[in-house]
Image (tube, rainbow, N blue to C red; front, side):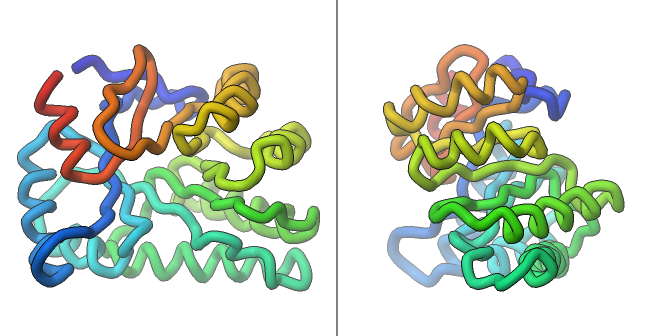
Length: 219
């Protein structure tokens, strides 16, 4: 399967990413162990550990691997920050917790999750923290996880050009609204899907590990 250029990250990536969502019988640890074994035997290069950073971090530390790591902040992390300084501290704390969990000094893709739209002070503080982290080599690419209302996300995006990659749920209205902006800004796009829809040409998709492995094996 051909790699695709992920926008202005200037990285060529395998077009199927795996999301570490844990479902099924048995304990979470047992399921994660089975899924990690299958993932490492597949051509998939990127694991989104957002559903369970501590658990996946353990396996990333214990298993020899070259997986790239993606993670998104908790939904609405910024909304209770009274000012930019506290917003920056919240992002820094989450990043440090994630780095400690995975036992690395670098996260390849760090997404700021937006459901409710933050204030300008909250967003500015968060982006300042992320830019500093990137300069210090703790983050490879700053991402936007666009879970909020599409038009509100679009308005925010047009006034902040910090994002190099965007995570967009596979919803028609959301994609129709936000994809043109991503293309205009040369922002890489990862489409979060449910199930096993194959990626369109030049597209990167994110789906649960089982579906991701099935997609990668079928192509």
